[in-house]
Length: 138
Image (cartoon, rainbow, N blue to C red):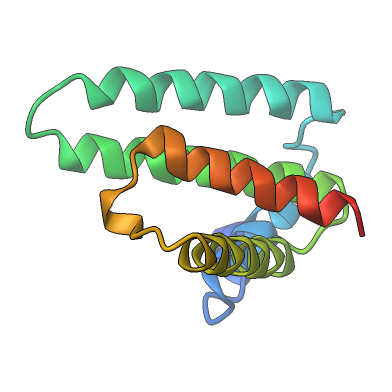
């Protein structure tokens, strides 16, 4: 920038955080600092997942996990940007899908007179898969 202000200062920090990340990424891309295609981004996401996984094996490591999770979310947001997907809209759709499926899982358990708190993870996962199968039929 000509007035010696950092380019990224142009990003709107009042945006929701995922959209702020897109704003930062677009500004960096405006000077050529960007992945040429999604393959590099997907590789970066896998790298970030590996880094998160490595940090989970270290006790009392909240600060490093927070840092690595931030990197992972930033990379995922970059993929959304390259796919012309609003990451806030994608997360909202994911939230709604999870809500819909989990409430359906609860209904099935209730009909079967099952208490969710007493079901094993495998039993809960089985109900989850049933909900997904039921959705595909419609």
